[in-house]
Image 1 (cartoon, one colour):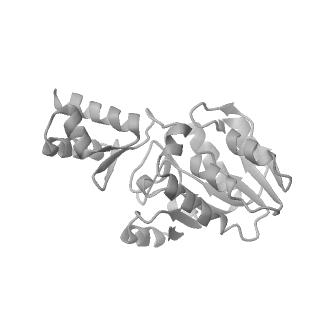
Image 2 (cartoon, rainbow, N blue to C red):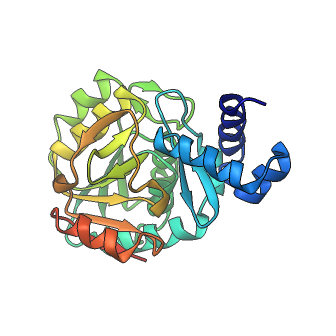
Length: 253
């Protein structure tokens, strides 16, 4: 197998399973560990995977984006902790924006009881979940529904968002880096996120450590646009300090 073909197979396996180990790749492709590491280095240099603790994770790009089912299965414990920490920072917010994605869904499920809130969201699952609660008024942003995430996009969404002034936005991204800011594969999704950030007084980013120091296709915000970043403890303290120097408070849980 030629190197390019082998690297494509590695990338396909990472995307199919959400993550792969060096040992698994060596065994599956019948090559040495050294060959696997060399190929993964090449894939990482091209921004297609990220490596951490002997594992390789696919980076979402314009040509690839995981669905909600895959996201639900990945880093579940970390997402639960991140969402729990985010809820602690509602403060006096009466109106909040909750982004599409699985971690925002976890956050929505942990919103405190008997606290009146107006929730604006582009996520069908979040709107459906919260609509059953008497203490929450839900504003679902209407537009084209994306099958991967069940989130709405396009000008109908941004037109509606532009009519709001929101106290607090909980924002997700497919990737975040000091160099490229917050990025996502789809231009339509990027526009929704950028608009939500623009109309919100406070902005909190939620994301597992695997999303850091990588980039996707469309930039929608700078790190300095955020008030707080919440991630897990696998985000190194050194990287957290460098990010905090750009403006936001960085919390690892």
